[in-house]
Image 1 (cartoon, rainbow, N blue to C red):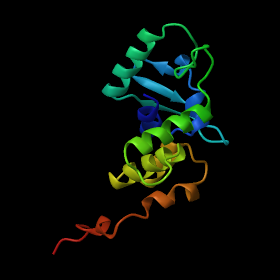
Image 2 (cartoon, rainbow, N blue to C red; image 1 turned 120 degrees about the vertical axis):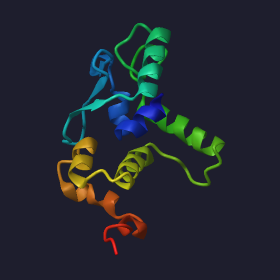
Image 3 (cartoon, rainbow, N blue to C red; image 1 turned 30 degrees about the horizontal axis):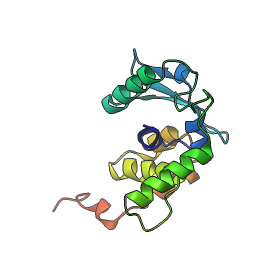
Image 4 (cartoon, rainbow, N blue to C red; image 1 turned 45 degrees about the horizontal axis):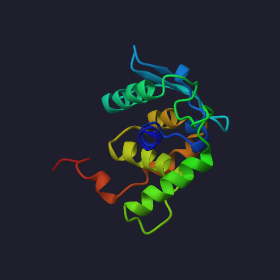
Length: 150
């Protein structure tokens, strides 16, 4: 669940750890994304897999304020998420240390590769400055294929 949300919404680890149930609206199928580091908040749609996983998580842990909570009911720590993600990366056979910010970057690159325009990508990731977003649009050379028809 944590990896899915982290990737789907480009969360920083601290934003993901602080995510509360009050930010989830099952009725409208949206999540209120609160950005840190002076980023712009946004309302983003939840996809079916996310909604199903979140509803199951809520059924399994009906009490508590945080979506990702510890057994004591507090927010899951960023350090705990880093450890879990590193272990998952090793188990998947990655030869490098997998860390949470790679999920955020993967979100940017995946959306840019799908053709999402830079301004939309900027707002989705909560960047105040477009300069932080343009890195994701520097893609493979084949992105220019089909611009001109013979």
